[in-house]
Amino acid sequence: MVVNFALVQFVPGGPVEQVIAQLQGSGDVFEGFAGGGGDAGGASAIEANDSYAGRQGLPPELIEELKEQFGLDRPPLERFGLMLWNYLHFDFGESYFRKIDVTELVLEKMPVSISLGLWSTLIAYIISIPLGIRKALRDGTRFDTWTSGVIIAAYAIPGFLFAIMLLVLFAGGSYWQLVSAAWPDL
Image (tube, rainbow, N blue to C red):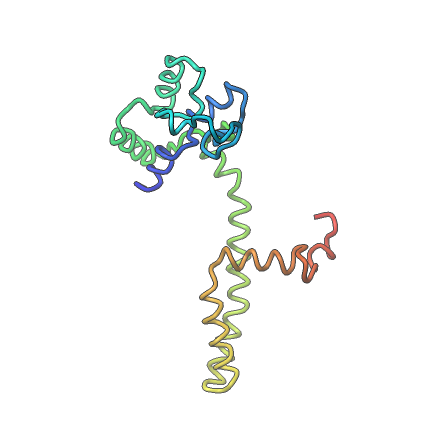
């Protein structure tokens, strides 16, 4: 929770920077950090010793009002304690991007998450139970050794890399276009 708090509170691109970018009409919070929008010889926001990249041209009173609105005028330890208190009361705040309550956002996405969880559990058991029975019956054979090697290799592949591999192989990559052939409207 400390790492999550630090990332949300101290990494550039927070709620104050987003509002400032919207007020200035740039829409890109990270423009000053990524080097976009200016020449290489100009002074960047970091070089100007400024706490916010989008601050140029806005009155300091507005910046202070935004800090107060998002609670960034309080000390970090107090903000962390308030965050824990709110979490204990199931108050997760409002999404900065969608402008709706986070609880509503989670409940909106819950059916898809439950469906994916149930399907993945079902598929895992449909594969693992018959495979375990067959491996037990053929203990020490080439089948047992070969499948053990495949299982060890599968555990070594990170989940995100395996997901990308499946997308490339089956969902319209340059190899087997099974999904796109079966459902061309996707």
